[in-house]
Length: 355
View 1: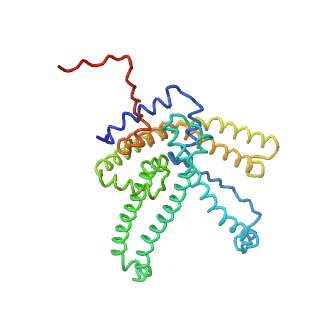
View 2 (view 1 turned 180 degrees about the vertical axis):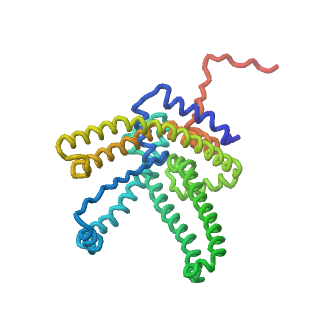
View 3 (view 1 turned 90 degrees about the horizontal axis):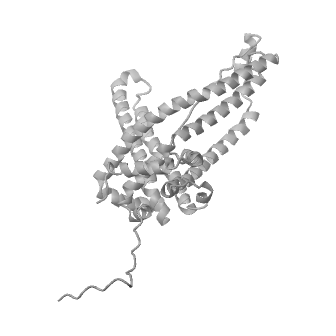
């Protein structure tokens, strides 16, 4: 019988310990951190706001700057460049994410991460996943536009926005209803995304299927075992919450540790600028130093967070693999190969005839 979501915990934990700590290899951790970061198995973010004081000689000059029309000859090329660069970077990130998803799957199966070799493999299924992610993203945005746009259009045609005080009750009730509809939509999108990377990607990797064909096959499995997959999803939510707390604590420690050397470098840069007669005000030297130091700090912080998240990066794919192995024979034979049958020995004595 296929194992449940609870039963899959033990082999997934054992697999993670064997891959990461028996023996411990720092090179493997760094490669898994890099792959997991780009594959989307962990998320990190941060922001820095730099407020530069404005020194002006008088209010008239400031008013002139605020009231002067924008220089479209300068802004137009920048806007065109942004309109071209943003979609290109988005597509590039999705493509890299699709390739890294299969590299992570192969790394967990083989218990060895070899980025260069694994990058050359799975090109066809990675391209299929790339197409699926584009279509899925467009469907998500289209559904969001419909769910928000239709109620907004109805409220606008009914005149609720022109005199909102006179229509507080329908606005409040409609807002609450729209909130729950959006939550249901986002939950459905999240489930499809998680089930795609957990149960459709293995089929694509082992049988070179498209994501749409993989979903068609998986849908039959899902409808046949609704309770088992619901229990799997519930267990994954519980473990994701626990992992988020553990990673948050580790991230706090990492941030404190990194602030010590970077804070020292910032103090040294400030003292060097003061010694050079630049003072502590914002100028070309201090702004450049702040940008460089901030960029390096964010890059090191993101990679450090990915590094401490390696156990999570390995455990969750292993958990889905062991849960799905008994339901998908090709995957089960890969992680638990059938031992070869030994040929009969020619020196084995023949059985005695039955009287």
